[in-house]
Image 1 (tube, rainbow, N blue to C red):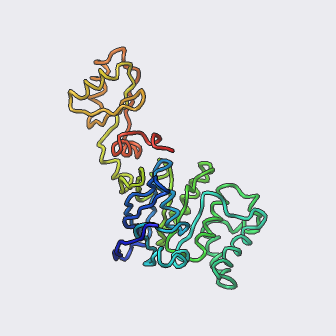
Image 2: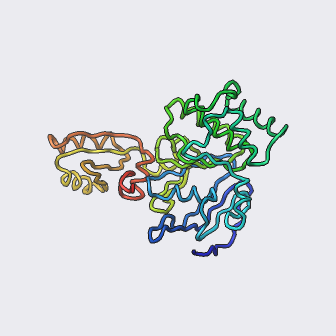
Image 3: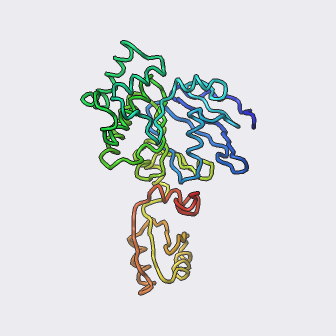
Amino acid sequence: MISTSVSRVVPPPNVVAVVREVRHRYGDPIALDGVDLEICAGEILALLGPNGSGKSTLFRLLSTLMPIQQGVIEVAGISASDNPLGVRARIGIVFQSPSLDKKLTVDENIACQGALYGISGKRLNARREELLRQLELVDRRGDRCETLSGGLKRRVELVKGMLHHPPLLLLDEPSTGLDPASRLSLWEALRQMACQGVAVLLTSHLMEEADKADRVAIMNRGKIIASDSPANLRAELGDGIVTIQTSEISRAVQWLEDRGMAALQMEDRLRVQSSNPRELVPQLMEYLGDACQSIAVGRPSLEDVFIARTGYGFGETEA
């Protein structure tokens, strides 16, 4: 076991969780390679990355499900290495796999969660009522959880996770298995939590989901390669991304390079950033002629940010 040796850094008052120089190995493979991250009160932060990028490992460390090999993780000023039970009291967790007892009602599931945290009697009733109203579950409180839709089950999971007033809410791939309407409902609930000052951290491999967050931390091969708002990350790439399919890729690459534009080849496509795609596209079509199979123009996406930072596609690092 590698010992932790990073000195504590006192964060600003609105920072709920701090990750400093965290490294983690599974034998020889490096899962996390010097990760630094801060999570602030009232923000929704999405950890975005392909499978194998390290986001699940970081989630497990923040959840105190694994010991920290090297680095520092603190939640509300409590060290995850020195006092994991203290951290557990200050986090709410919604795992990818459901944790509800299907044969129990919504109320009964919440009461079981309360018992785990020593919450009962009037205190339990008051907090349960508050959260059931907030997440629009009052009329379903007597229903067995096996009868609920995927979206309603996720809301019950949120009630369980928030029952003890944690300052940090952790969600692992929260949209897994949800239909579009349920995803929208889930995000409305998360936004309510953030508006009340809760720091929300979720993991995702879905670009469209991460785009809804206040801030995105893009992970790749155990490192955070970008961290900012989705709008700011996309703005780094200018006005447009041109995607070209052609039977003469090398010829197209040379034409673009002669004009100072670097094209990235992805299988049978070329992608190039352009500050003036309206001018570029007709010129390129005229040059390629019949060898031009298709040209598409789009605004930069988070995937384009990932490609620009790594040089390959989002799915190409999956393990």
